[in-house]
Image (tube, rainbow, N blue to C red; front, top):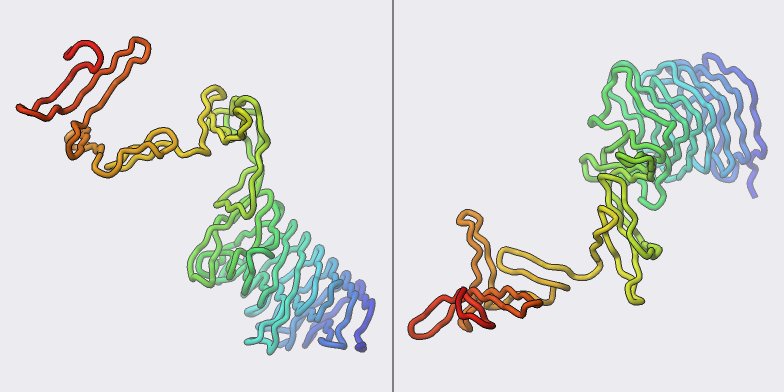
Length: 371
């Protein structure tokens, strides 16, 4: 075992004009675990060497109602290098030269080692940062609940930066969280920079794009929220952005279509003769089965029914929009178009009739030769 500090608790302490870190814990076997910092008030010198609070955390690090005011040059108010940290109602900063509010995790190129941090920010105030609001290094990631980012009145800043996030571990950015600027611009005109989707927005879609640092371009950022269906008293869960289903989608059968609200349509499963099909309706009356092959149409091909009954090979049906001409062609065998009245057993034919001489026929295949 190591010699780490257990159950480290500091409450209601004031650190004024600090030249280094107000609180700092060590790494490795000497790392502290079960750490609670509550009500700490920290003010650093501009020349301070070290972040306001600098911790090597375990899985139980908590900062509650802390406030780091001024921060040293190129330092961060809150620096947590590893483990899981929950910050509740933490505030800062008042000012600083190239200062960040919070930096989490370590990256080899900058810190000599890769370390990962899981961050939960709840009801925090992230403001006046002149570099990063929150930066998650290496594969660190974060959840944001009721947390506000307020960029300063001037300069170019990055409110949120993730070095690398895999899509199956993205955190949450909830509806009570937000990002605003008092005048500062954002790096690459984007508030969020990330290699991988940074988080999932729940309850809103305040941010529609982020800066994909791997691609060097903007990428869409989805959101899940509730919205009213136009023209109705129905509210639905709305997915803003693209949607990808990983796995299977199951739909419960219903016996008949239900009338959807205006400007919408319903996709549903239905049992017909013991076989479940997938149907679409936009008016609750007419329904169309959509899980079977349907007519396929190109410039030279048309299909019917399940799509296998097609005119292919030497048979072609084309449409010339400029000439407003529909043309059926076939090499021999007298191509024709038939129209059939099954009740009166009449079939009309429009086609060619090869012979001596070659002729065209417009008539009936049943009774009269011509109409």
